[in-house]
Length: 607
Image (cartoon, rainbow, N blue to C red; front, side, top):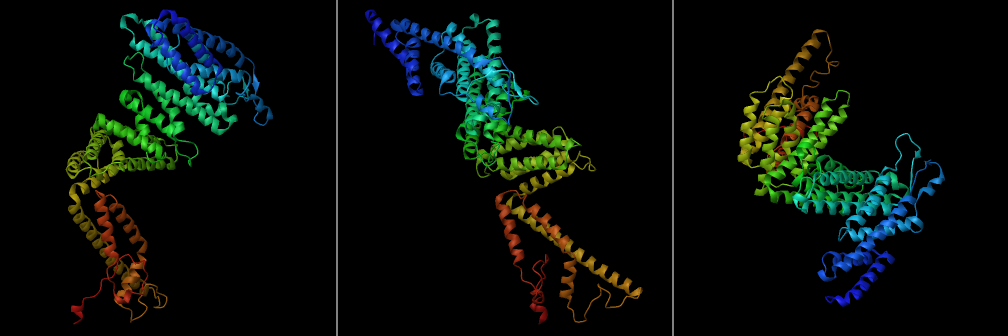
């Protein structure tokens, strides 16, 4: 709007007015508008007036650098501070950000953050600003008591709001440096430039992560709400830095795997609050989504990058916001590749099974620890499997790839210590695959079972898994026939047990008569000549009641491993029909706890 050179003075006067607004206001919206205007004029404005805007921009950076340098010497004092939890002097450690140096520091950081959102500060002047902010961030993140200590060796008077602004400002400056380095011409970038950036990046990210992890200790005296909000701001800064730097085209700018793992630990704390009654909020779910997505696309899982599988493991336990973020993350992975989604789920299950394996190998650990790990793995597999539907083809393709990865992990090559992984983690996904896929899995498992030592107790887990796959491979109608066959076999076994019990009763009576026992004292003798065979059979069954209940419990466990939800419903209907079978009139007054109903006599026999 000011193309003529004679209007330069008026244009510079206008920019000075915007600069005064920037230094005299603290409202975030006003600061953002003023900073956006100056950054646009200095970087993207009309070329004829850009030099004037650059001068104003440089003067702003100089004033901010001078102000922060002065405040840096005041807020950090090299003297020990006694910290006694029972002393009321702890109130003196609370920094007021409404007046004094605390207020001045907050205002300066608000202006720096507003400028860095839209442009990088000039190189020389911006270096001064960044050095002061990086120093303050490092000092405040370390200002915590170590175990056994009661003294702080430095007094760092920085409030929670200023700490969050420090984290945001350092993140922006670090990202701008990474972008400039990645977009520079290769012949102009030296090894010293790359090494300097990597050192600065790692040090700054370490301070950010440490501040996020120690936020409760540093700012707990301000209240739990303020401490949680500060930790969320710091973690959001870490996630944004990871998002920009990890996606950079140049490998020299990208983050190492160990830094990615540390960033995820910080994010996991806000996604899983210590109070079990609280769920993750929208901001926490967003941060977890960012880290998981970057890790899934650019992570080095061979070197311990775990953000993506760990994010999926929080499904159905972190609240509605986190569940929605996880489903969106899985949809994004599915768009890239079905195998990538299956591989991420497999890593989540494998990580959980590693905890189970370590607990079982530890001889000093309690059995409850191993059992809790097994229960968590089963629950995790059930929760993730609930996302998929066997009637949706794209879901079946994912589960097919997942099942193949799990079977190869346990059986190719043959590893008996991983047989339990199939039983604990993969069984929940078998109802989600097709009958053809189940037959293919069954063929591989049965072939590998031939090479397993029968005396090895670990083979029982493999056999249980094979039985689940075999039932699924039969299909719905064939599986129903198989259940009926098993029910008939169990019934025959119960009848054989009943006949054995009659023979034992006769032997007991004979032995008691030989020793001179009287009819009244013999508890196993028939008490009355008028007792009916039905009542005698009922009394015999009552003596085997506990054994029959155990059989019924085992029967119910087998029923729950049916190949799909429709077959489970059929099994429930069959149980209901068995319970509704008619009984003999002589048994109408019997206990309802009889587990084997007495069949009604035929009318044709009576005639």
